[in-house]
Every structure is written in structure tokens, then in C-alpha cells.
Amino acid sequence: MPKKEKIVKVKNKSALNSFQAPKGMRDVLPMDQLWWDRIEKTAKELADFYNFGRIDTPILEPAELFQRTVGVDSDIVEKEMYVLKTKSGNLLAMRPEGTASVARAYLEHGMSKMGQPQKLYYIGPMFRHENPQFGRLRQFSQVGFEIIGALNDSIYDAQIILLFDRLLKNLKIKNVVLKLNSIGCRVCRPGYKKQLQNYYKNHEDGLCGDCKRRLKTNPLRLLDCKKEECVKLKEKAPIFLDKLCASCTRHFKAVLEYLDEIGISYGLDNTLVRGLDYYSQTVFEFLAEGVDVGSLAGGGRYDYLMELIGGRITPAVGGAVSFERLIEVMKSQDVKLPVKSTRKVFLIHVGDLAKKKSLKIVEELRAAGIVVAEALGKESIKSQLKVADKQKNLIALIFGQKEIFEESIIIRDLHTGLQETVLLSKMVSEIQRRWREKSEIN
Image 1 (cartoon, rainbow, N blue to C red):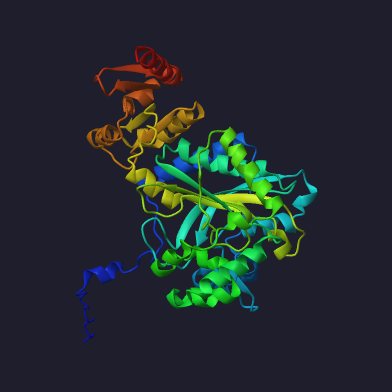
Image 2: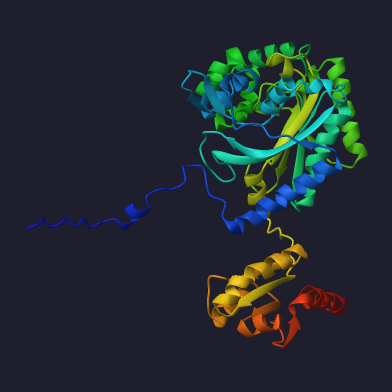
């Protein structure tokens, strides 16, 4: 007698669905895509207007690229990079930010031989292994704008800041504050670092563990620390603007004059250094008052970055903004998304033969630029009309056995319930006529 198979009962039903998105990473569901589409559309429109060309770089880059540029003492490199070893032993990192990748591509493809400056923008995911919180995820998407090449001209700093100002305004984000600082160049920065070290040495006992170590290797990073004990100390730290050389002073003064000219308000923040080592001279951040998501957009000048990865000193300035933070702010401020056009029709089929021929009607409507929805998987008219009603369609097309024989289709106004039969050859023109009439009435 055959042995009975043992039936295993699952006590915990949740075990049947145990897979979840990794911590700090999430799915973007269809209802959330409207926010993403809005940001991407706005960014692309600005890029087109200001003549920025799109560049896409790989998600994986040599880990050393970020060690050299972002800084070995930065939180990103020390704690947050996702690093993997290939079968050949090479270390690759999932990009934690976009500027270094764009700089690598600029050098690799000889873009310095093209027209200068190169105005580039990117949109894509970044990865940092940090503590997930409001507006801060381990996988996040950024849009960034970079101006690389030509001269170290303050007008490019102002133009990058202008781009982010316009982006935030076009997204209807309110209560935006712009903070600015200059962190000098190779001439004036060493002297400031020395003064900074002297100041912090007198308060070394009050520093966090990371800052005690960075005091010797990279004192500028102390101004970027967010831990409470270090935030208090940096309030009385030496002010960099007082230590700038004549060249950096002229450059920063010109940036402020350009911003004044185009009516962008700002505040000076002498502790602002940004979290990346490649910055020089101008650095900036946009924040939204009343919403604790950190920096909305930020960036600065990075004339020495190319030299760090094997090129020559190349004037450059750029910045980036996080989709996730923008969305959190837009939702918290109750920003309304543009209402999508309701000018679409809903095709209802009656019977198998009509269902088969419905695909051809859908394609004819698409070719005419008419948006069409359908529920071809449902069979009854009642269930299809329910779907049409939920989608708030105003016009329904009803196609059945009789219409196949007569080469016609029924057009029904779902608002009034009135309907008429028209020839298939006149279907498109009749739909367009009805839309024109509704527009004239409105």
C-alpha cells in the first residue's frame, strides 16, 4: 500500500509572503508615479530650455573613483558605500552620488575637445547605506545639473543655483531658503584649516569619536558633522569668509551680485561645507522651512575634481536634488499635481468576435492620437461600464455583433446617457467633433 504524503500546515501565513524590499529601499507604485513623472518632466523642460544634454552613467563604478573624489574621511566612503568584489578581484561601488561619475565620463570620452562648457544633466538612482528616515533612503533617485569646462566664471555658479531655484518654484514648493558659503581654494584653504584645527584642539574632549579622528586628517569635515555635541561647537568656529584670498573673494562677490540681479534671495552660512571633499569656492544648499528632510538641493564648484582622477584642473560647477525629498516636501505642503486630461474614450466589447476585433479599433484610435482605455478581460457590459465609470471616462464606444455586421460603432455620452451609432470610418472624426464642442461650451 503506497505511503500517504505528509501534509505540512503553515502555521504562520505571513511566511507565504516573506520577501520584502530591502531595508531603506522601496517600490514606487503606480499611484506614486504621478509625483515622479511631475519632477522628471519639470527637470527635463528646464534642461531643454537652458541647453543641458542628458548623460547616463553606469550604476557600478570603480570604488576608487569615489575614494579619491568624495574623500576617504567622508561618511559616504567610510560608512555608506555599497562595495562588491568582482571575480577578477576588482572593487566596484554602487554609485553614492552622480558628479564623480559624470566627471569620469567627461575624461574617458574626451569631452574637453568638444564645445566648452559641457552642460550636462542626469536622472537616476544612487545608493548609500545609511540609517533610513524621513526623506532619506538607501536607494534614492537624483536629478543633477553640471557645467564642466570653459572658464572659472561666477556666472556659471549663479546659473546652476538659478536652475534649482526654478525647479523648486516650478514644482510649487514654498518657504524655500537658499544658503551659501565659499570654502576657498588651494591658496587660502590651508591657512583656514590650520585655524580650524587650533580652535577644535581646545575643544577636543567635546567632539564625537569620528570628529576626533578627522581633526588630524580633514578638519573641514568637522563642520559637516550632524551630531549634537559637534553642532554646538561649530557655531563658534572660525569664519571662512574672513580668510578667503583676493581671488576667491572676487569670485564669491560676483556670484552674489548675479543672484541679486536675478532676484534670488539667499543667506550666508559660514559653517556650510557640504559632505564631499571635491568642492572648492562656492557651495550652496536649498532647504524648505518647516519640513525636516535636510537639504532639498545642494552643490557647488569643483575645479579640482578632474585632477583627482587623472585629468587637468578643469573649472566645473553643479548640484543635485533628491526625488524622494522633493516628494515628501510636496506632499507635506499639499502641493496639487496638474490634473491629467480626461479626454479619453473607453471601448466596450460585446461577444468574443467583437473582443477579437477590438484590438484593431484600439490601434486606429491610438494612430489618431486618441487615448483609449478598455477592460478586454471582462465580458459583461455592466462590469466594463463600472470600470469606465471609475476611470471617469466621458465617452464610451460600444462594439458588438450587430456593429461588426454593419461596420459601425455606438458612441455613448456617459454623462448624459445619450448615444448614437456611427460608421467605423467616421468614428475618429465624430469623437474629435464632440471634444471640440465640449471645449467651446467650457
